[in-house]
Length: 481
Image (cartoon, rainbow, N blue to C red; front, side, top):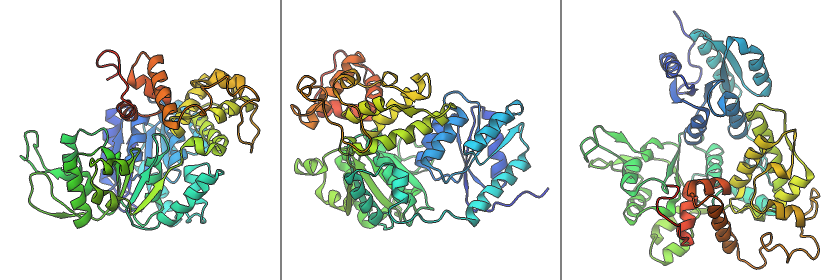
């Protein structure tokens, strides 16, 4: 029987289902139609795949543990709006499926689904996408829509730099504190750059063990070490024709710095245990929250590698320097999380905005995002109140900070700033504030690092880095490991 032709050659389909049998059926059907496939057994895992791979279309079950298909739809609409989503739903849930279509899903099928019908829908969506490519956003508009915010002078200047850098193919070094969105910025540079159709590959240099990083980046040949049972293509080679993101570049070893420098100079790699030089043509974007110039002065980071990486430097403003953007960020996060949790849209009260505008945000946008996500969970109605969000100092801020007025910068109540040192930064440097915030979070979570990181809205890798940076002593052993 004749099958629908792939209207978009080399299209990649992400299949998401907690049933392994369903995933196998989807893979077989799509492979027969000459599509590339990626799989995930949960919506949360699917988000990770979307963040690290180029995906043209998503096919997802609705009912899964965790945030499920509807939650995944919300994440895709918020972060990858150009990727169509087909939802698979049980026969008795058709009204719910129709509701998700209205919420932004491209289409749906009922289980058990017809394989030919699925292929026809995919071909139609990909054909429509190829025939009607999304128009290039007007200058200054597209990037701000992707990154959100932009009312603050700091972000307007940042957008202007991104607009100039994105269409080029130069190496970029993204600097910024944890939680400022460096990975998202790298993705935007890729999507708006000349290699947008190529792969987007992220290497987490901070959490990958130094002994494994070489094999992860460069690959290896069978027999090159004890557990090398087959040839493995490295992530650099995978990124050929696209963009390679080296996250937390400040953590790589001196040996890896030397190998990376050679790659940047020669644009060739050698797999571990191999003698062949393999040409790799990719754009390199590096990101870090470390002070690389200081590491260069200490002799801990190669100066020649630093200058190779920083052809262009983008420094992401921390959230405390762009507080004018908090109302818009809040609105968009609440909208996405309301959809993800399948509930009516939640909005923030003026009192809540007052608290959010006054908070110091040591975890930056990630901390704001996590606070609002949990806030939507605790919110009993459709208006988010200060009591719904879990923020350190929230009660103190509630008592001392005047009401927030849209368009106005937050200011402490007269005569009360000195009475609430936890709110301001007059007596402490920004690093001192961050140091104290981490200690308070660790104390409140019985020194469990993972829980403290969640409380701060930062990654586990970031809190390990901060603990080491500030030489914070953890009572006992193996706490939160």
